[in-house]
Length: 180
Image (cartoon, rainbow, N blue to C red; front, side, top):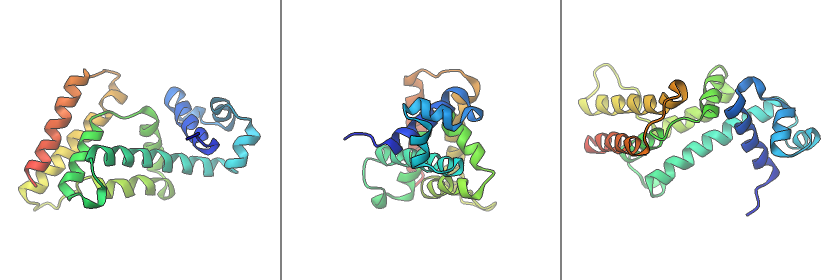
């Protein structure tokens, strides 16, 4: 299936931010990256705000799609522990710079953070109460570890060997399902 211009624009916007950071996220840069004119970009996104919101939606949906793929079955048939394990596995693949920058940028706006919060509510173990059970606390610790692994390469520029990353990912997922 041919990629629509809208999808091309969203993917191009993510590549621009991945490569050059959020400050370089302009109509001109995105249009050039997508191989379109600025007018072609404006046809699909009448304002920068509309484009920014669409990129947040696009990246959050890609993240959720990755978790559904890691789950290996329809997400509505999964237990919370299975969804949490898929979250840990996907986070172990590491953050793309664009995802990280958009999440940080989006945290200042309820409109932008809504996409990310919806995904988190469905897939990540919730923050436990102070008197949480051992299982709930263990799930949350695994969440923090997988979140840290997700950030690791993006903020340190160190690269984990894929076999090590896979081993850590599998161990985190096992800790969640073992405690379910």
